[in-house]
Image (cartoon, rainbow, N blue to C red; front, side, top):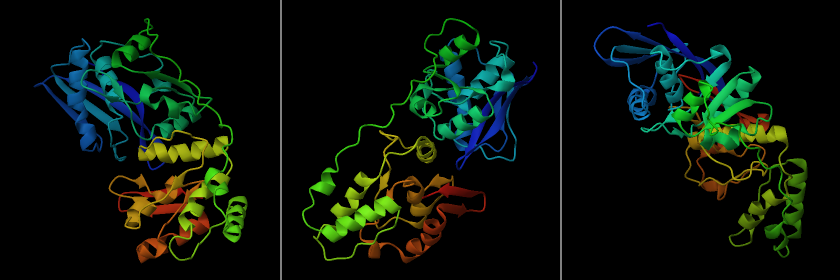
Length: 338
């Protein structure tokens, strides 16, 4: 059978690179091979895809199924390749056909019964697909992230069968554009800030820091209200703009974290035992740290002297430049952290 291709995205840091999922069914003993620098979670997708296709009523090819993720030099990780791999196998076995293959992308993790599950880094994929003017199919669980890109051509679905029916121009009302995200909520009263009695100098310092986007260091004996003052700083900040919402949401999407209010500035207060990688970001798979998760918000370091000296020293460049650069042997990522 001829080789069939399906488009998807690989997320590295905050960037989403185009990936072509190619499938070829050759003669030979029944087996599935996934190539293209795929990590463990991607190679495990062959079992999830096999089970999903069979439970959805499709047959799994009996020959040698070869799945190539191109370009081969780009590391692929996570379960977001399940949906494009399943569709590539269905197309190669001529069970379905996909029109406009060159301008349609798919992202989603499959359950054993064909349900689509949430993936990380979806907002980066949505922004890249919108920039390329491509249509993007994504899980319903990521609807709130895709809705932030108001100009994108996105479709959400709950199940593999819904996607296949929609591709075949059949009745599939379950496949629809994402619902819009609620805009900025009415300003809340500064409850914590107003209930602080006295401390006029410290409260004035908070107002100046919030108005001028300054850093603030509070020194004093225990029990004088430093922590309460610091946590009330977030109440003095204005709602995020549309551009800031996308920047912050992209960081949280890459970290796999959900925000209940996208327009509220983030507030992060890591424990003093946090490692350098937890603060700056990094790891085997690049993950945003606390400085990036507090982008356009507040990073509160309670009990500052108890933090590692090396971790505090690493914060100097991000505080000055507004970006955290994480360099490892396999990647170099730049996270925003204003």
